[in-house]
Image 1 (spheres, helix red, strand yellow):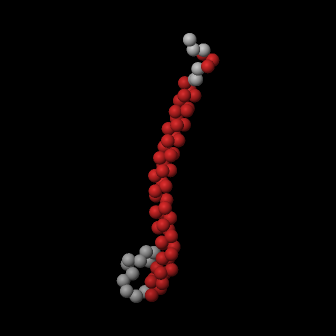
Image 2 (cartoon, rainbow, N blue to C red):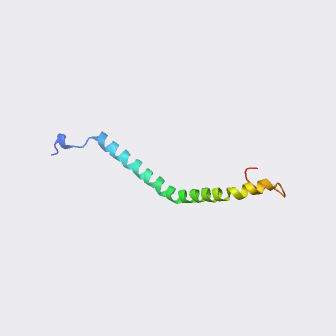
Image 3 (cartoon, rainbow, N blue to C red):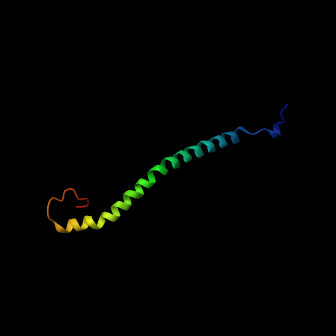
Length: 71
């Protein structure tokens, strides 16, 4: 026979299961973002390193400029 004082309440079980679901979802989001963040950082690096070339091409004002960003 179970002692009623030593039983875990249903509210505590619901809270623990909700916490477990939140932690699993946070883990999945972090795992998927771990694959995405390096590509974004690489794109930012390439854009910042090519920025001077883009502005040099914009200064020349010769030729077709429709392919340049920020015109």
